[in-house]
Length: 121
Image (cartoon, rainbow, N blue to C red):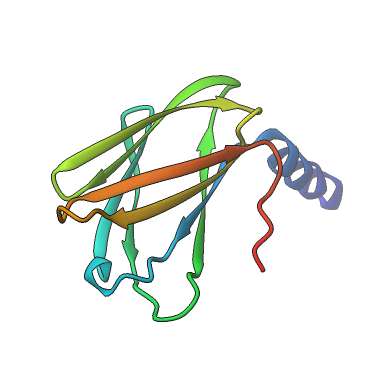
């Protein structure tokens, strides 16, 4: 029984393919409680509420599971705008998402993609 349980744990750890997404919490108070809807391959995965900070930005991490290697579509819905990004697994396994408020009052969402984890200091 222990061997079977250990085998299942090992398969889950090594068999599950995931994107690791870090959401930067904004420093702009106007973006406090901003709801961001996350879709992966046009399927809703999660909702994130951004919490504004007064000092340095903080990060909330989410893991988005996928079934196969190759191209995937990450969509982020903020208010009435959808931002779409093409991702390649495993080359772009780690993603950082940042929301900014433009001078015209519209929200812009940008991402950074890389194959290795981000280091936050």
